[in-house]
Length: 90
Image (cartoon, rainbow, N blue to C red; front, top):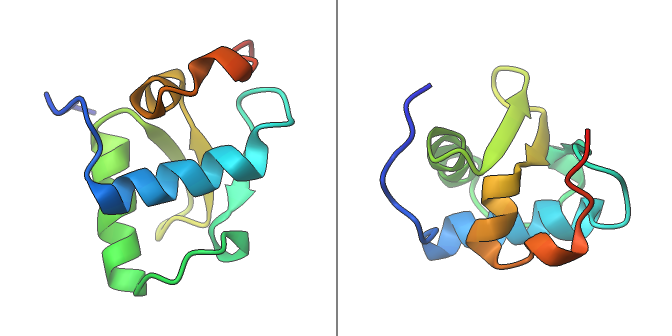
């Protein structure tokens, strides 16, 4: 899948990345989280758009159509500036 040239996530995408990171930070990578368990108060259409942008940018991986589970990538951690504290093996 093509990657966008955008390096800094827009605010809504950053909220999604942060929520996925917070939900999985104490596990080994890649760790998956169910979209429904994230504490995000975002309209589902906007959430799906943010997830799609994050996937195109290489910041998230998804499972399901529409996405049911999310995993943050190394690039996603780098975009958040959180890469140092997350195990990137796996």
